[in-house]
Each structure stands twice: as structure tokens, then as C-alpha cells.
Length: 264
Image 1 (cartoon, one colour):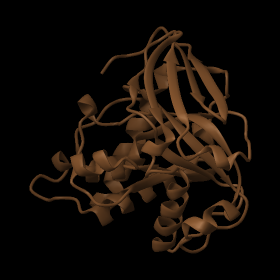
Image 2 (image 1 turned 120 degrees about the vertical axis):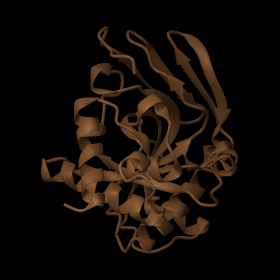
Image 3 (image 1 turned 180 degrees about the vertical axis):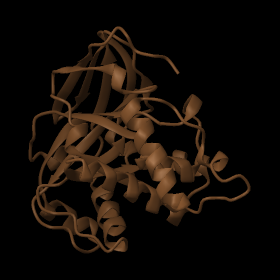
């Protein structure tokens, strides 16, 4: 087993067992993981899930905020995979014991209507979409203390762990600067706008098409594209009702069910 395969196995086990691991730099002291190698680790980790029966259902984008790009010293987005095992029921109950230190952020999710097999322009993006919906993404870094480098987070599938998706609509005309509100137990914890997602969420579809094409892959019709966070993420606690409202699109929600969540 190569070092990259071994890293993928460690990350996969950490996610399955909800047990944090050290950052990857500690795996091979003195050797720095490149970004390309981080994506190799990510892909190998996802393939382990698929070998167990999970199904890839789409992609998620990270660093869709210019401020976040500057903070991390990068000039491009990062991306990861979504599988069916990550899907939580809209309005349902989410068990926290399967996460390490989960956080939640409000997003917009797209459903593709056609195979995306090449880089798209902004004018073409909507023609490849069937619908859009409000969404909540649960992120959960598998590293100790929620600390990681750019390469760490990419290898860790960009911290993707779960998501809920609200009702689908074709109201793409509402996306330009829609207000976003996230509440926990009725209290507003985050407010923002879809304009925080690359200025317009449809630009995330463009970026997703470029990233997938660069990898020599095709994103099939019927895939999900999580466009990126509209606000900062917020830590999740047991017995919490989380509600996300995106003006013009609707809302999505879930309630955390576990009272036995292990803090890390």
C-alpha cells in the first residue's frame, strides 16, 4: 500500500469510526503533500466508500468566498464528492454520534438536467440545470481540533459529511442576491446573501464544470451540485433544531437527535 493509499484508509476509518486523527503532515514527517496528491487521496477514500456500496450523487464546492480564498492563500476553488450515505431527510432527525465535531452552513443546491462533460459558460449554466433548492451542509473535519492545511482538507473530501435539501424549484431568477437566514432553536445564528457565493450561485455551476472537466470526468444528469456556503459555519449541539431560509427558494431543516455526542 502506498503512502497516499494509506492516508486514504486513515481518513476513511476516521470518518467511519467518528474518531479524529492527526494532520497528514504527521503521517510522513518532512514530506509535504501536494494539492494534486491530496486529490488522489480524496478519490481513493471515496472509492473505498463506493466499494462498500455507497453511490456518488454529486459534488460540493469549497472556498466559494473570495475572503476565504485569500485567507487560505489560494486562487481557486476546491471540490469534493457527495454520496447517497450523506443525504439526510429534510425535516428529519440527524444523529450526531456519527460525527466528530460537526458544523452546519446554509447553502444552495442544484440538480443537473444534462451530463456536464465540458467547461460551461455562465450563459450556458442554467441550461444544464433542472432545479435549485435551499440546502444545509454538515461539515465535519476528521482532523484533531478542526485544524488542517489546504491539502489536509482536500484529502478529507473538503470536510463534507451530510446535507439536507429543501423543495426543488426552477426559480433561478431569484438567486442573484437572495437573503439567507439560519436559525437554531428559533434563534438567528447566521444571516447572509447568496451573493456571497462567488457573486452569484450559478458561477459555482461554471466552476464545477471546469473542475470536473479538468479531472477528465463527466458529471451525469441528475447529479447534485452544492454551490458553497452563503455564511460562516456554526457548531452543532445535541437536541438542536436547525432551519435555513433562502428568500425566493424556500427552506430546509433538521433536528439533531443524539444526547451522547462525544466532544473532540
